[in-house]
Length: 380
Image (cartoon, rainbow, N blue to C red):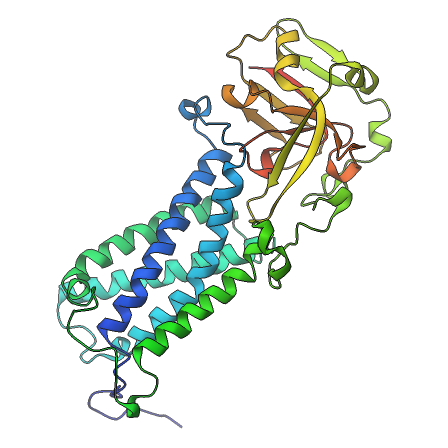
């Protein structure tokens, strides 16, 4: 049996909340969250994958910098989800506009909107799944997420440019329209916006506690609670996942390459001057927590190997495979007195999951670059 649509225009939407004023009001909030999310996301990407010309200029201070920016990245991305859904609700009747295409320019405009909506939905929901470390797709998340971010921002700027006359007409409170609508139209615009703001506040407060310590008790829906983990600190990549075992560490020693190469056993490392710092682990998934670390300054090891005050470092992990098995550290990080080859966490010997016998801890650094199970350190 075949079903055909009756001739003529489709459904008419009478509710006045599906209008440019409502869409503009929500769009202002959505644009702000997208801007924060995009800016902090680009910063995170360059901290993780710095081009050669930038590596020596990435700042190691403030030591809590990455904790703040990545927390903002994840929080703004989660907050953007209800805002995007509300925005789509306000404008979806335009999908049924008749005729669907009025001209070539109108077709291009609709195509740009389709790209913007598809890219934004893809970006926000894949980013949300990343916070849970769940990747039900065949592609590499990091480069695709980074590339689509630029598509979203390009499409958003084009959309704002095309719609600017309408946005300008409805941007301020004294613009045409009214906040009070007839009762027959259901909730008025003010009530709708209050409801959207409440939804954004709810998802923010109940997830931000994974990176904002003061909100930790309210983090009911946060993907990760920093309050739980081995030695009081969560673990993303375990020793089992990295295929590092206690048996493989029986004859462990640190090899330091440079003009004056040398090796150190764990006992010899413990005999060197020890320094204690309090630094956060801040992961790309958004969670972070400060901890007390004890170990040997990386710059002291580089100096002993013949590295000058401008030398970089390359760190090689004992893990069998992984995207961050080899980590390069720019000059400012390598020479910062807070950057340690850590041997203890909270006054205790590192657990195997936290990188025993030695790991890197550095200020203002993504967690994936705080290399665990260090086997080799090189002067670059």
